[in-house]
Image 1: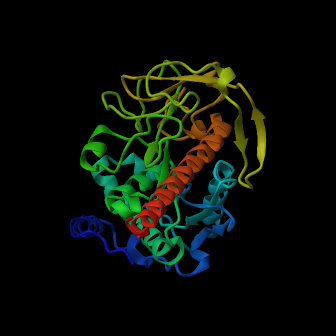
Image 2: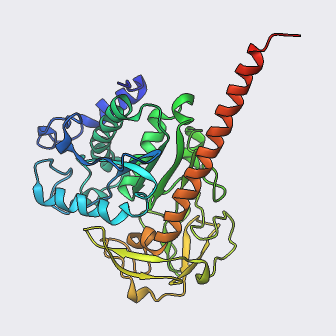
Length: 344
């Protein structure tokens, strides 16, 4: 099993000492047990693996989700089901239950919030470590998560993917709805923002707003982040017309599509803040829902507005990765063959 780097272990221990004892009453889940996985090896015939991390669903008056709360775990599974259609045609899927930070944690400032995020991440890391040792077997990997799930994906990148061998297995990271900052990319070179439709080993990140919104608590003013347009896959402010949108899909907790509409909206990248500005819709029709977000903050619709485009892109990046891997394997085999041919 992968060991945690010494510095990270120190940070984990320091943060965990700040969490009230009642929050730490539950042990780290045993990920060798099937009940601790929302998805486990779903789609055995696929050529790549998905490690999917759930967004925030715990709305109770607590700081971290209890693994024994059946109602919240049902919402957890439902939130994953809402996203799964983006990935399930391409990947074998894994998604651990974890003691995620509850919504009330986001009322705290960043320093006060971090211990609860660290506890959540300790479970995600334990699940990923178990998956690597027992399930991966060198297969290509996609990391994915929305909102808190995206935050957890960045942490996985930071802890695990400085290892060149593991990084070579990375197709992409769909870290949607949580900022990919300049500071993160400076500190962790393995966090590489996507630049095109089919580059691999990269982070696909964005969050959506109406043109008139100037900041949110997720994407505050003055913070520069890296994003990519999920319709034209550009990193400049070239607008994508709504005709380029193959389908917005609004899904249920069962994973079924309740409503699908092609060409619902276009978008462009705000190069100052790095957010995606959504056009052609009325903000009143898409209320923010999440406490603390202003009207026109489309955070909860990030993947729903661009569902089909993301679904297509997962397949594009995976096929490109597999084609490149095949070329490398063939080149290596040719080198072996040439080396074995006797000199004339």
